[in-house]
Length: 374
Image (cartoon, rainbow, N blue to C red; front, side, top):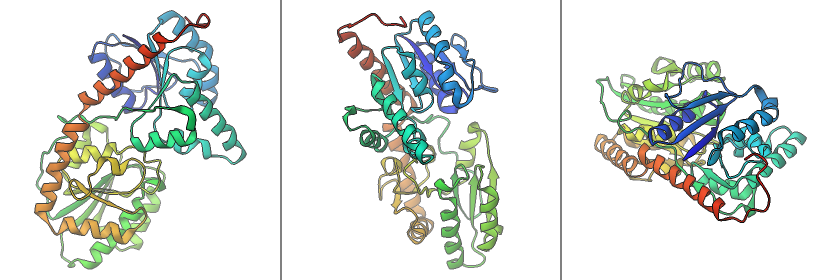
């Protein structure tokens, strides 16, 4: 199979798909308008930088993509991100093509900007209808896509898997109980809710209790969140680590006793970070938004609590703090579930079956007119 992948080369998700698909023997061309920075595509993968960048690039790069498709003649075009690269793919007119939605492209993009939002919504729905098939990383996001375009039919679910060799239990010595999260410091991820819940826990705990919160990640809300921790009187017990390379995330997860994702918006389309924590044998506490409940079994691998309910969040965390055996049991069950359902090779198998299905269905369709690209 020869695949042309149209996606942001700067993003770890794209990079992992490229490496995995290449490893499965797929002949691969990656077309992108994003700078891959220090990442290098595997030998044998053709990386093509499209000439234009930014929002205008998604329109202006159409002629370059058409030429590339004509020259490479792939069996399938797979565009990632329905709003930007999905627009480029839709305008290129190639068949067959698969559109993989990511999250903010379907949850946020069609609702942004007032009157512009209506135009964005029209463009997004057009892209979804133009594709030969649509894929989502979660059932929750697939349902949202069907709400956007009720007549779209089947949406394939192709979860983003976990490298369970890298993300594995490697306990490290530590003092007391460490609550942790790995998230972008932005309002939708509810780090402020986690801080308020932690403040409640500290207030109820003995002054000498070795209970700390570690926040890994950076973002536009960092200064505000650091100020909030001081206002709440918990700054001495909270560590803001900042951004770390993805390769270092397993080391940080293994410093935690439990993991929390207190996101407040449904644009949390799939719980990759939660699955990474589970793969490291951590019990998890998550809010009931987007795809997070899909990756947690209530009362078996962790707790799911109502969004923006600080008291419920604090209570769920406290139940795990107070019960070492429960933490161990939840963590072990979480890793087993990741191994069974979200191991990276399994996710690659699912994606390859999706590719084969799109190609096969296209081959069965009657040809009405010559393909303008091929």
